[in-house]
Each structure stands twice: as C-alpha cells, then as structure tokens.
Length: 591
Image (cartoon, rainbow, N blue to C red; front, side):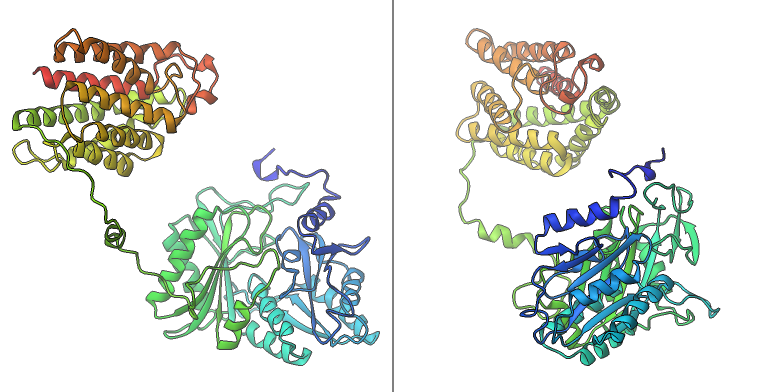
C-alpha cells in the first residue's frame, strides 16, 4: 500500500462522524446536532445568540480540517456543517444548522459559501428554504483563488484560506452588535480585497482510495486546488525562496485575470497555510521568505499568520493568502476568539502593527552579566607550547578519523559521529593560530577548558557537543587555582562526574564515558607511584583497552540502547574517539 493511502481510521464510512466526535470531545464548548454532521456552540440559545447578535454559519466537505468546525466558537462561527470527504454537505443538514442558530427573535444568520459548484448549490438551496420559512439569512460567496490565468469561462475562483479571514472579521463584527446588513457589506468588501495561491508537492488520498493525482518526486504544481484540481503549471522542485517568489509573482501579476493588485505602501495581512503534510519547519521558512519578499517590495505586512488552517488531508504543500487591510479589518482580525483553530500571533506589548523585529545584540546579554569569574592559574611558555601541540595533534587525528568513526556509528546511530567530532576539531584548529602567536588561551588551562566547552557547544552540536561542553566546563573548575598532573587528573574526574549527572550514562553502558572512566582510574592510581608521563601513558592504554571492550558491552545509554545487541559488533564510535584524542595527547607530550 502506498504510504499516502495509509490512514489511522476505524472504517471509511464512519471516519467523518468520528472526526467530529473527537473534535467535540476535546472541545466541550462545542456540540453535535443529533443525527447530523453539524457542530454548534453550546452557548447557542435565546439568551445568547438570539439576543441581538448575528449568528454565523459555514461548512463544506470534510478532509480540510481544521476547517470548518475548528472555527466554531465565541468570536467566530456559531455553527459549521460538514459533508463527506471533499463533498458538499446536503441541504437538509445546512438548513438544520441555520435553524439551530436562529432562535426566535434572532437578528439574522450570516452564511459563508466557498465558491465551488456543489457548495453554491447546496448552501444556496438551504438558504432559500430558510428564507421561505421566515428566517433572516445573509450570504457571501467567497472565491479569492488567484490561480486562474485565462478568461475562459470556468466555475470561477475557488474559495480557499481567505474565507477564514472573512469569517473571523464577521465574527468580531457580530460580537460588536453590528446588523446583518452591515456584516454582509463588510464581508463582501473583505472578500474582494484578498487573494490566495497554492503550491503542492504531493497528492493526498481520500480514505479508501488511492492518490488523488500523480506528480513526480522532483516536481511541484502551482495553483493546485484543495481537492486535487489541476493547477496552472508544473515545475521542477525549487528552493523555498524561489517557490515563494513564483507564488507571489503569479498572484500579483497584472496580466493574470484573477490577480490581486499589490503595490508599495499597501497594508496587508499574510496567511501561510499548510495544506496538510508540510512540516512546521518548512512553514516557518516559507513565512520568513514571504514576509521578506513583500517588505522588500515596500508592502507593509501588518499581520502575519503561519500554521495549519485549511488542508487537503495529508497533501504536502502550502498556500499564501494576502488581504488588504484597513483599520476595521485589522481590528476585527485582532478581536478575541476562542475558536480552537484560529491562530494568535504574539505581538510585542502595546504594538498596533506588526514589524519584523531586529536581532537582539549579544552585547545586551553580556551587559547583564556583572559578576566576573575567578582569575585562572597560568603556566609557563614551555608547558603552553606542549598544550598547543596536544590540541593540534588531537584535532588532526579526529579529522582524519571522520570516515572511520562514521562507519562505526552507522551500526547504532545515524552515521555522523565522525563528522560531529571532525566539525568540532576543525573549528578548534581554525581558531588555534600559531604556537608563537596563539588565538586560544593555551597558557591558562582553566580558561582554555571553558573555550573548548564553548567550541564543542557551538560547532559540534547534538548530544556529543553537549557532553563535551559539560566535560570541559566542569574540568575548568579544577584548574582555576593550580595546574599540575594531579589537578589535570582531578579535572578529568570532575568532567566525568558531570557527564554522568546530566547525560545519564554510567561506566559499562557502552559510551564515550567508558574509556574516560578507565583512564581516570588508572591515572589516579598511578600518580602516587609513577612519574607523571608514565602515569598518563597507563591512563591512555586503559582508555584504549576500554574503548575496544565496548564492542562486547550491552548498550544501555544513547541511541545504541535502542538497537538490538545482535547488530552491535564493533566498538562504540564515541569511545573510539576518546581513545584517539588521548593517544594523540600522549604522543604530543612524548615528542
């Protein structure tokens, strides 16, 4: 079965109903009309909705969640009617929804219709029947799609994400007590001032069916509809920046008969929408590119929204909606609502318009640090030269071992241990300078340890970077006042203890901790009876032996602990890396 056809449902026939049941179970401020796919606010009644406020109703086919039922709530819709997947709801359900929110004495019901043939027919029929029965019903048909590029007769511009903005604006107007006529007028005005363009990377699949269309892995389609309707063109996959430019250029192109005019100085709201299968990481990148592009053209982006608002099941893709703002529309977009799916961007306190923030300078953080650290002990030029040699050789050995360590890591992880160690080593080597004029504080081991901690954190990343940063940070404390073979050994042990405290691993768990612990024990035991060099040599040999013995250990920490022991036949790559740099330090000291 293709991945796109896999669904976590109980059965195809009940998936829409169970979806709605789940929504109201999570949001008990919503309820279902018995026997119908109609979601209504629980505060609907003659004392609330019928008392001087216009009620709002919308709906459409399922598969576009969170639309439309996710926008039912105070400050937005009063009710939403769901059809089957990608199918308009039947007129009798829509009429039942209108009646449910039209209490005796109601000032009227506003109905939003997305511009699709089925929705226009079914919602239109329900509205006419409601009016025939004496109910006051206003209507706005929303079609803001900017994909159409020809003047040939078609079903018209499709109603897309922009419809949600219109609903939000009208929800605020209703709460303000505006009349049905006033709300209809503003709704039509807002609908005429917006445009949406979509871009799809993959198809979706209706429950029980295969993919809705076919598209190559290296292709994307501009202007595709939320039901899989063909777009205006297919292109090869491009970067986020290029994709956004393509979309905005098409949306605003004057030669496009459905374009949205956008010029320098215009004030707009921008909504970046996930069509279903796009990650938040990608969406935020798209939002960044869209705002930067608009601002580079002199457009003032007063409001920006980014998230999942109206989808096409699991389709990977996005849509961008622009709405020309005035003070009324912006105020209504900002008005409070507790509808579950409506976004709430965080603005600075007291801000009226959105502005892209400048980066906070690091000096601001540094200026807040008033306490200076202790003065560190230093060493002579000869010993500083040895430290330089140790750093240089250890870094070079780890860079040379990148492939070897990556190969070991593929057995238990994602195969990047060597690259991580090499990246950190290259960063240190690049900033090392010359022995005569070093850029690192090699004459002050305690300060050097803190510098290495920062380097590990900044350039290595991941758990290895965090562990080495902890190790060097803790080690620096032991080197503050004195520097000797004994304090170096104490620093090693302090680093080990801190790694155990925060990393969760213990000796014997098949990690980089094993050779470090073995070296610490051997070094500490030998210092009382051997020369410093001999003691350190014994420590290095103990580390190398322990690193090789990890091949026989059961992994109980790190990613390897999730891998079957049958697949772990070689030494742990992190442990091997420790043995490599310790051997390099010994050779540099012995040269």
